Length: 517
Image (cartoon, rainbow, N blue to C red):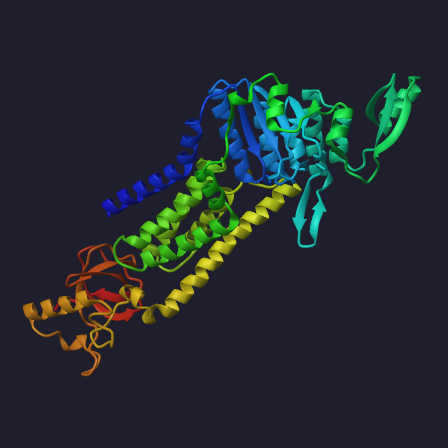
């Protein structure tokens, strides 16, 4: 038992270490240079924030003078975009956002992409690109819906704060998030800029001389600007055709640039953290755990179950969502469930509490909050509940199928106790039981009459064994050379108690204490 626990702990540590630290090691071994380029050319998902954070650490530890964040995205998760914006804002090196327009990209920085771009100290764009439409939305069964005012207000405030910090026009940031903001051109001494309707009213009351131009963003419309408009209105620092041109414009040589692309391990982890794979891992973990509990000893199925759960938690740890609370909840839940199965008769509060704790720990490990406060957090929470729920339901269905199919699947016949009279007994089922019966007969003669249900088909009913663990009411006994899972009818028996088999029940036998003759 102790050996099995040590093996279990080793497997968990190894799996989490491989999942968590392998990609980080690759990032540390990157080249050194004055300019680091971090491409963010995909939808904003959970892992993108982790990749950016690790890349920023690599660049700064190498003494980078300039960090270029290439942004080419339609948008994505608001929480990840806010996380990325915070990490970029905390960088000590000079940060420049660049929206590229090469053959492999889309040439846009929309929604969450605009939020990330405004977090950089400078903003450059390629010709033919655009930026804007940063209002938060969430997916429903009826399609994309605008977020509630609470969420819009939070994102609007963050965009304004970033624009103010980095010297971008605040009114542009507001109009990209809030469809109620009206934005117009104003010309003062030949200089063109943008102003909100409220700002124009204030300028008129103060008697300032200016000319009103076109309406760039009307009520009910989110602001999206082209590369040319961004430069014209003083939002971007310039328009350049390529990355090399940008580096030259910033006073560096393209030869000094190091591009931190996603590694193969990063791609694997992106897949591992997807909802489908997480659900599949939960299915595998639950089914393997069931097959381990219903078979004697600690074997392959237990190892598979541990690895599956370790990968789920290890990937969540890499996302930055796994904390001591989730780990504690999971371990306490497992302990309560084992207590219910092996010690407490029946199934009650301990078992239900264990299941609730395990499921809650899995859901919380997929997100960085406990209780949702915004629409986008509710969307994430519902998704995570669906992922875990789908895994659990899939696992239960597969367990039911296995239970129904066990007698007919030769690979699983080792999990079923075969009786000497069964057609597939000896060879297909449990050949080691034949050895046990033969050995017992050689030592003490033929089995007692009670061990035979009929003259034509003998069974294990009536055979004697020894409890090798406490039976409370489930445990393990040894019959001959075999260790099998046993259960009583509710009685508790101590280890080394002599028992007799009353009946077989699928993967276990039902026993009672042997009466002294």
